Image (cartoon, rainbow, N blue to C red; front, side, top):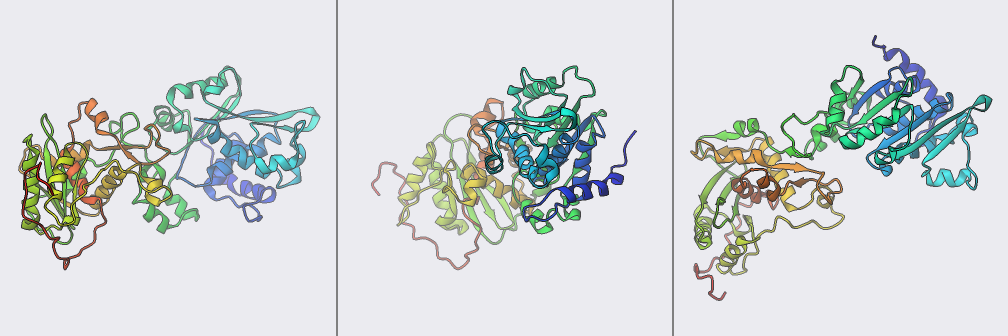
Length: 477
């Protein structure tokens, strides 16, 4: 039988208001969704709970106050588990802060030998907290990572950022419940692709709470302007809409950047480009790969050249010929200079008074910059800009191929789970996708190279002086 959570909200709001303080030292006021999360722990209304909220909703702090209130009233043991202990300590850090908000919780808190209230308040890094109740009974909460759960048991378990706990490690967390009677499991997090978290979201044995940005706006937890800004960032569907990626769209934590339906909507049969005028070139030699040149205007893009000619000099010759023909400035050109591309860039460089450097999409951004915090490298930013351009109405001119080359865009995946990512967006490297039988996305790469620089219309800018074309790769500049 489902419980009407709304009837408990005001009691929770008043209880928290009377006990706990916010960052300004004012009484803490829970929103409706936070009241529901609080009651699902404090009252233990259900024994299996699945919570998914948009990012920065305040779920960790709400959980901390609910847990603190619970263990100061009931002699129970609770475990907080996460993919790593640092993550699990987020809840206990909030909990320790709120212990000292009122006499009720402070007097029940047990300060261990050699400890002081001041040091605990300052560092908030204790992994085990005890609270002495009446009649010599105790309430306890401890922190563990998933692997550290081996050998421990607890009748009540909270999985923080549950979707980030790998399936095999989550099984170790679940076993903590063992055969303990009346056990309780609370799973909370964002909707990252995770088998166990996805399964609990549809398991009828779990009571579910879904708080997306729509509810966040209604409750005043997030502003519409912030949502619109976030919509242009990676992972919006997961972090703000609380949507799992469609099944089949991900592999090993990979997210498909552009769907087939989105490519279909972008395809057109007539060229009517205007505004910015960019050229991107992806260079290939022998084998299955192609050398591709793509042109992009403000409103649409097209493929100008695609060949498997192993003579890369011929590709350089095409680039040098198409620049004046299409009125493309040298500074609006992006040619991949890695590998075979270096030779092409060297040939092109000899034909301009101030040379041409080419582009290395593996380049990283200056440490501390906004781009460095968001993107793993230049390739990730290029493709994200491509995605935003397409979502804003950018069009793709059909190329006449029955299997239109633009569908290569559907083979681009991004992730934040590869080694050394630290939460940054990265395009899955080509060697990984090729290893799974996905052909090299030469056309997609060429289009992405038109997004190296910001789109700025400079219709009056004169063409960069071009010297007499020299195609001898051994000629001196």
